[in-house]
Amino acid sequence: MLIKACTPSSVLLVCLGNICRSPTAEEIFRQQAAIAGLDIKIDSAGTGDWHIGHAPDTRAQRHAKLNGYNISKLVARQVTADDFRSFDLILAMDTQNLADLQAIKDGIDEPAETLAKLALFSEEDPTYGGDDVPDPYHGDAEDFEEVIKRIESSAQAWIESWKTC
Image (tube, rainbow, N blue to C red):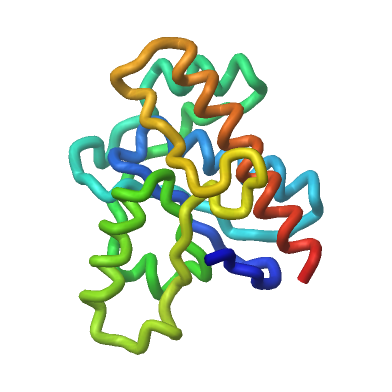
């Protein structure tokens, strides 16, 4: 199910711990949106609570920097019910986090249509559509580079999809 909607005013990017994929996606999305001239509030969070208050993984920071992105000032936080009220669109890095987000949303005692729309981060991407952005946490340098490549592609795909509405 593709979400064809006009440009949201706010997007939350979500992975498990908010120290690798989602902070990288936050900065990449922020830069790509700015280049496209879009004024979008962009943030990131994790479904888990292990890394709350921590900076992104040093490997994620290093690879982001090598690719022109600075994520060093970002701080991990956990998704809250309020995020579903204050963001228009929440994008999950993988199907497990998408399912976890749907469970949180289902537990909020408000009409679903008043809450953020949920989608897989790669949903609009013609190259990676429907694929998980793989978690590089237990991987090596190649895995972190692959994550950046996929995030760049999928972020651009969302921005392109909003231009057609």
